[in-house]
Image (cartoon, rainbow, N blue to C red; front, side, top):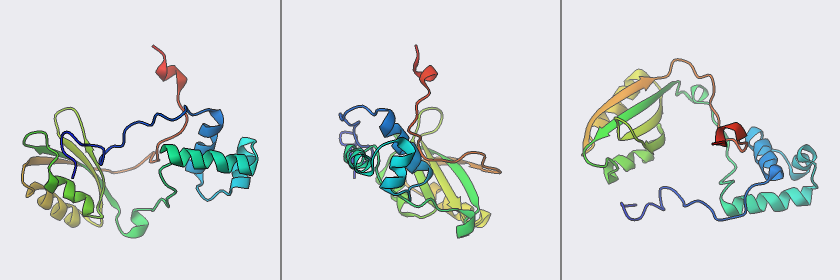
Length: 173
């Protein structure tokens, strides 16, 4: 389990690999949109040969930019229509072994340590309000947790994985 001095198990250090170029970003963007594309199809989309795309994808995986190819599941279709964000207030820094054990629950999709007036932010997806209530009770009963605040999602307008593109105007000083 990570501690204050060893957090590599939670967040991997930034890669010292070569910077991404335009082809890398196009490949990553195409894979983010459709991870089932063959190297030949990717090559056609980014104007590279299939072997060149294969080599770049291999390097992107090795560098950690492309962590995995995964299916994106639909919560409501899986019987989990209720999406909520739970703010967790805890004693001290907040990240405890017991609280991190929440990651074992399939309802917990994400756990973040955040700044502001809360310690941790959880993204959870449940089958019903009753299931959310039981999950909140379990979180609240966790040692070190002082309280929770929940925000139930009514509508989702955008939900996506990280995008490879960068908005240059946001990077300007």
